[in-house]
Amino acid sequence: MKNIYITLLSFMLISINAQVGINTATPQKTLDVNGTLYVRQQIRTGGTATVVGSPGVSGQLFSVVDGVSDTWKTVQIANGTGSLSLFYLNTTKDITGIQFTQTGSTGRYDLNSTFTTSTDTTTPNWAYINGTTDSFNITRTDNLSKAVLSFQTTVQIARGTGQTWTTGSASYACGIFLSKDSGPFLLKAVRNDVVRGGVGTYRVFNLNVTLDALAVGAYQVKAACTNRNLGNTGAGTLTTLGIGSAVNAATLNSDMAQSTMTTSVLQTY
Image (cartoon, rainbow, N blue to C red; front, side):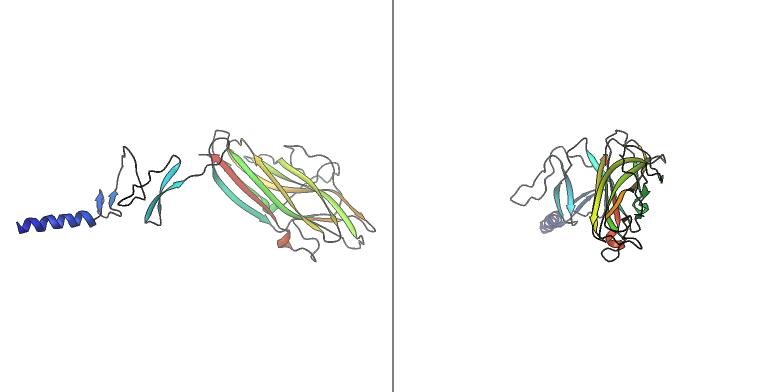
């Protein structure tokens, strides 16, 4: 009889304190299943001896926090067309920029027009800000993919050698060009603006665009800017225009003037 009591007591201690493994010799939890688990009803977490745990709600995922406590985590999905997930995010920068010293075209800019470096003042004289180049791929075939492109730079005016004007101005435009599968770069977004004031005056320029329904392919994106009218008030000649480039070091340096391009690609999952 004594032997029986000892055996029963040992069994009870094992049942209370031991971790049980199914198809594993090293269980990590009270019950550790190495294989497929089929649950016919609910999984509840966070319970105690007197409180029933939570079964979670629709849209939540089961998560292990710090390898110790288990809980349900809510997954936030942005509203919009389809269910989109962030597939790519990158920011490029350029501290060289570009400079213009002559008046260019003041005409219009057409969507999907090709990039041109013509010096003819009747056509846009575009120049790339080379460091803002980025590449991404679209792999989904449902035509719901989006690319969100954000370009920022600093624009400054200054006098050239021998110039004496006190108040200057310059108009300009910056655009975002996109190429698909090594094809031509086409204009996808553009804004024009003006900077005016004394020598060294500068301002920040922002351009944001969302491109919808992108087809499967390999894409490359670049930012470019062009000069429009470089005028001034007072004695002297044309204004020197720097875009992403410090043309007057007294008020701006290359780090302050730098250009950035942030690319975010959303695809269905």
